Amino acid sequence: MTARPRTVTELAAESALARTVLSWQPAGWEPLIDHYRVYATRGERRRWRPTEADLLGKTVYPRFVHDGHDPAGEEWTYVVTAVSDAGARSRPSAALTAASQASVTATGLEVARIGEFDGKSLEFRFAPAGYAQIPTTYPDALVEYVQGRDTPAAAWPYLLPGPGDGWAGNKAYTADWHLTLDEAPSGDHDLALWLIDSTRLGGRLEVDVNDTRVQDVDVAAGATRGSRDGDATVPGSTLVRSFHEFAVPAGALRAGENTVRFRVATGGWVAWDAIGLYVRP
Image (cartoon, rainbow, N blue to C red; front, side, top):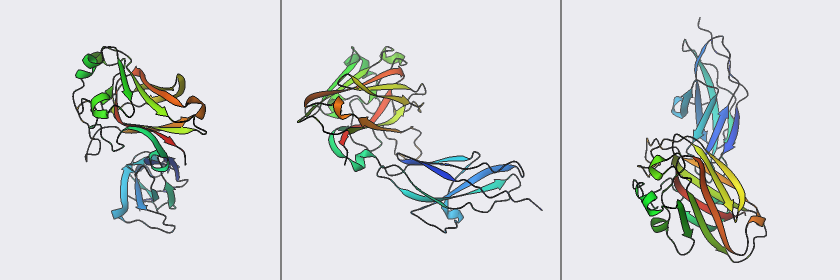
């Protein structure tokens, strides 16, 4: 008689922007586990028992990333089963309900924005594949954009190159976003910085506000396709989207002109989705 794997325990969820990361206790070696099956249904379901129609995916590891959530946040209920190398299945784990993190683009009040938060870079200059024009148009490796005067199509290239990009002269490009505030903020703001892709080099994107460092963004290795493909929402797209949102302290901003500076300090280019500054609710 084929031994049934133990029931998966300690199912837990880590909330992230546009995704939920699941983890659980490994099922052990007796019997040998071939893979885990992850089931999901929208909303909260306390005594839910899934069917194969609810199968979200399979993994050989005790970890699974459920991505593609609405940036406003989504709630799902999850169940995990273990499958042995002989095909025997464990009983379903206890159901777990978890919600992804809500983006500031959905919860905050917009102050200023460049581009659309839509998984595409097509609204930006030279998109989707004119990257060779960037080093000749910006020989000093500096992009400048004035909020209220400039438009993404005319003044914000879809890629910001880095020192790992030979085609752009191996320079650490900088993009300055100039925006005006009527008064000094009384509270912290949030900056949303979404990318549709990056190179396989990954890298570090430095973010300064009026010469104050507010964030070093670690850019994970991407697909290196965003230089030629501007739409990460197409089914089957290999582009590696990433979402970065962080606080801008009130003291870093001031009444009048402000400059938000982005600089690719290490690695290769980043491909923009959109950038926005938001007041917290």
